[in-house]
Length: 451
Ligand code: PFF
Image 1 (cartoon, rainbow, N blue to C red):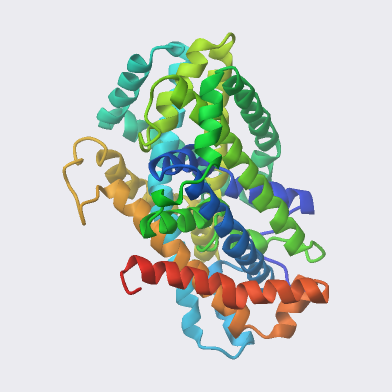
Image 2 (tube, rainbow, N blue to C red; image 1 turned 180 degrees about the vertical axis):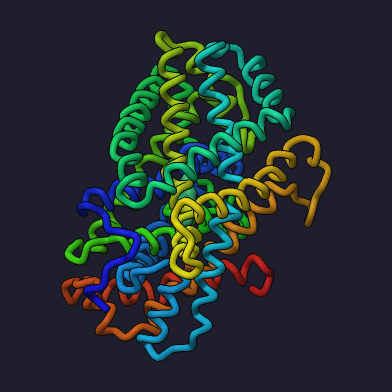
């Protein structure tokens, strides 16, 4: 099995894989979600819990998930079936693959709506430029959310773009899309941080908010959100990295590449935070403004700065592309399965999975306006999908991946795939067998009130 290749192709190089997996990791989660959930959960202490989750839970599970992908070489569902046969384990493990595929569709349905907001802002930047007045900027955002037609239009445009990249397959579509955009996005974020530094006192206030912890702000929900976000931002727990790992050439070190990817992802999130909070404070906005935070703060900066028109356009274009490279990884597990098990062509598989996701996405778009009163468990459709996937499905998926790779797979298969020096393998083994599953389990128990 170790030398088998995926029928869907293989990354052309180690660098191509790093780019693609970084593309999956870096997205709206870093630039849109990280700042607003940090703002909602009081800042510094939340950031520390989040960083601890990345190191103790995220990185070991990322290594495990890509390792399983490369060993199984198929869609997550079939990979789990193959690996459980190899380990003489219960076949029901393949349901974990199904949970992942469903999580991908559910996440993409709202991810695409938010990416639609960013797409709408590209056009607002081009045609209107941005106002430097916080009230006008807020009104522009509220108008967008109030319009079902605009939201559905941009959601549709984003889904069409995603599916047309996915159709082209591993080397043609996925690789090319990330090669260029990742470095440019990074450069632009650094530039925005430079701009934030010009806000004087607000800059220090922003940085203090982000890095000086006040643990009284943290309750079990905040810990769950931080942990869920560690899974979300690294793209773990649902098979995205597993399916990318299945296209990974044999000689590439999984542990090293995982460290690069998690490192890059974390740096991008922190840069986004350092760029955004000074602007929030400089303009009298609330850090706890919620999902609209970057859409209400960044345009003010672009409205104020010289050349802001161009930077504004560039920033939102890049945000859309960062979202696109994540979106393709969210749907790839389902597309790969449709090709493997239903004999669909890639094109047909992309269209079918795109249509299902789009339909669900329309209800998310409506949950910001005409259906905003419709609530389940006191949550709108958007809030519910976000909570269900990021806070529950991904951590539970990650927990199962940790158990499967740490306890079910044969050690000799795991170590052949990871090829780590003895000590490093031991450290990973402790993290994946005890620390990561233990931590996820405790947080979940805490949330349901058992402890
Ligand atoms: N990591 C992406 C982001 O931070 O925007 C979102 C994502 C991608 C979540 C892939 C889950 C996933 F499997």
